[in-house]
Length: 366
Ligand code: TXA
Ligand code: MG
Image 1 (cartoon, rainbow, N blue to C red):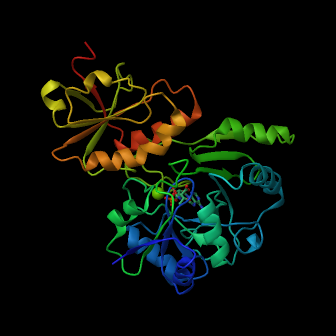
Image 2: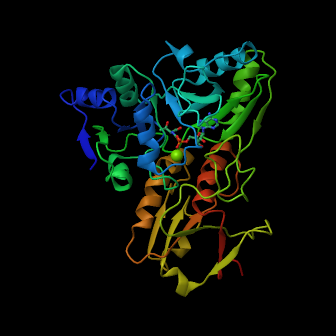
C-alpha cells in the first residue's frame, strides 16, 4: 500500500531515502503532483509505468532544480542552444517543459526509446527543496492513473495509486499547493531552433515568441495542440501522451455551449430537464447559473471569471464531480469564446476530459 506522509523537518529525509533506495515518491509542483523516480535507477523508472498503468511508449519529463549537470540529461546542438538558453532563462523555474535532444547516457526508459527528452525546472518551493535534498534529477509524470484526471493534492494521488506498494506521497503543509493547477506547457525545440508547442499550458505561444524576439531570435513558434483531436487513443508521433481521451473523469462527460457547435462531425447530444437531474454542471463565470435548480450539483470554476482561478480549480472540480452520489454525467463549460491562450489551454483539458463529446441543453438552444 501507498503511504501519505506529512512533510516536516523530521520527515524530510524519509522522502530522500525512499528515492535513493529506488522507491517512488509523489510530490507537489506548481502544476500538478508528479510521480517521481531517480533518473539513474532503471528499476525505479519502470515502477512509474507499472504504478500508473502507463504505456512504455509515453516519455517522461525530467525535473531539475538547477542547470548543473544537465549534460547528463540533454545534448544541446548548437542550432538549438540559442532558443534553449533564451527560454530556460526567461521561464525557469516555472511551468514550461522544453523537449530537446537527450544525452546518450540518459536511460531510454525516460525517453520511451526516442532521442528526445522533456526537461523542466519547477518553481514550487516544496518541489525545489525536495529536488535539492535528493540530489538527483527526478523523472515524473502526473501522479494519476493513466488517462485519469491529474492530481492537485495528496489525497487525489492516494485515490488513484493507493494500492501501489512502497509509494510515498509527500503531503505538503499547504493543503492545495498547486498554484497553476494544470500541467506545464510542453515546447519542443526543433533542430533549426523553431518551437512547436506539443501541449498548451500556463506559458503561451505569444509569450514564448516575445521572449525569442526580445533576444533578436527569428525562430517560429507554432501550436500543435488538438491538431489530432479526432484520433481517439491513437498515439501521435511527436507527442505520444496527447491523446483525445485524457484527463477523463469516471463518468461520461460533455462540453456544453449555448451556441450551436459547428464542428459537424462531433457527436451531438441533447439534455432536457429530466436528464439534468443526473448531471453535475461545471461552469465558468456563471454562464449556466440558470441550470443550477435543475441539476444534482452545480459548481463554478470561477464565478468572477478569473481564468487563473479556474485553472487552479479545474482538476479538483472534475474529481469532486465524478464522486457526486447518483451522478451519471458531467456537463462542462466550453469556456467560449477562446479569446486568450490560457482559456484555450484549459479548454484543451476540458475537451479531452469529454473525449471530444459535446452536448446541448434542449431549452437553452431553442
Ligand atoms: O506539469 C507537468 O508537466 C507535470 C508535472 C508533474 O511536472 N508532468 C506531467 O507529465 O504532466 P506527464 O507525463 O503526465 O505529461 C507529459 C507530457 C506527455 O504528453 C508526454 O507525452 C509529453 O509530455 N512528453 C514528455 N517527454 C516528451 C518527449 N521527449 N517528446 C515529446 N513529448 C514528450
Ligand atoms: Mg499526465
